[in-house]
Length: 173
Image 1 (cartoon, rainbow, N blue to C red):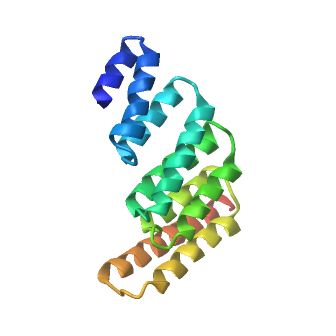
Image 2 (image 1 turned 90 degrees about the vertical axis):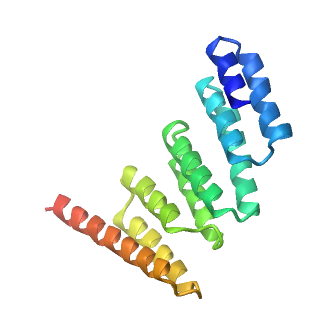
């Protein structure tokens, strides 16, 4: 179905493409992340940013409710970048990540690193970036399953934070 919508879009039939994307998202495969993102990306290509923002918000909230870590990571990352770069709403973008990592079932190393990267891309303060790393480490330490993966994630986050601090120190010299 996505291919059908793309075909209509490429051939200049945006209303038909919109209808197909909407049917796919709401009737045929509701909650399917690929369908949600295809519809959102269509609206962005059509320069319908308000609709894209609404769809992102709905998809993000659905993923949070389902405690779907992968979906939350993918949608939160795209949604926050969209808010920051296209809507010029960096504060709201940071709130999306904050909301995502507040759901302990959905927080992951990748989500935290995306959160940090957005903060860094906007030249947020070192204290704000440090605060995100502290949340990540605290969250990973709360997990009762002390698996090898958890220790690898902690190591990776600490390594990334140390690298960040070194870069900050070098740039301030």
